[in-house]
Length: 221
Figure 1 (spheres, helix red, strand yellow):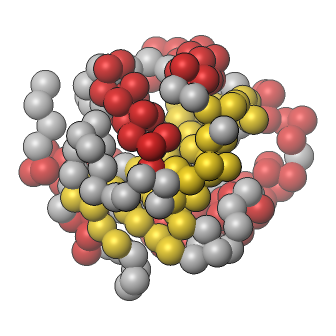
Figure 2: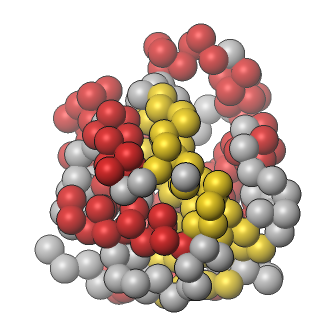
Figure 3: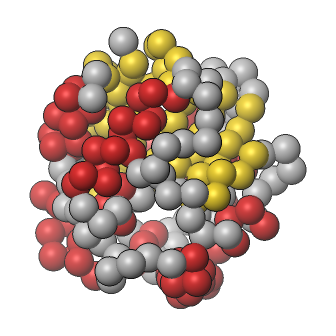
């Protein structure tokens, strides 16, 4: 199936439109209470598959970039963020070793096949400076099971182990490999109170019971 900018706009609106404000609030919490602790405030950060920009608009960073095939992404970016409107499996429009962090959430499974995932991870490696990291968050096929296929544009089923293996094959050292991180609730239309999310992030022992998304972090040697 060929993904077009028009089809992406329709999918994003259908999937995120009703919860747009809530999703942005969720990402504010995720950034301030978790991801900001992993990312230096002066880092050069790229949001891969930025979507409606909830992560990149809220994370603290020195320089920010957003990559997406959907042209609407640019209109949702905060000022000062550079937009890369391109296919992520093609050569990135960035200099080699020009990034400190590449972040991607719920995106790699939308690529058409494993070759595209591999090419994308390879481009991330090339554009990261030595010591830079690739942070990957996404649904774990082991734990979401059939619900993985509730989305028309899910193509590549992934687990934390498979993705960790790919990162190693592409030259990364895998520093974090968590099979159960965040729940899979927001994509299903659920909107629990934000204080529960803050509590959840602190009580890591409960992740094993409710987490259905992996968190994999690879660092460039």
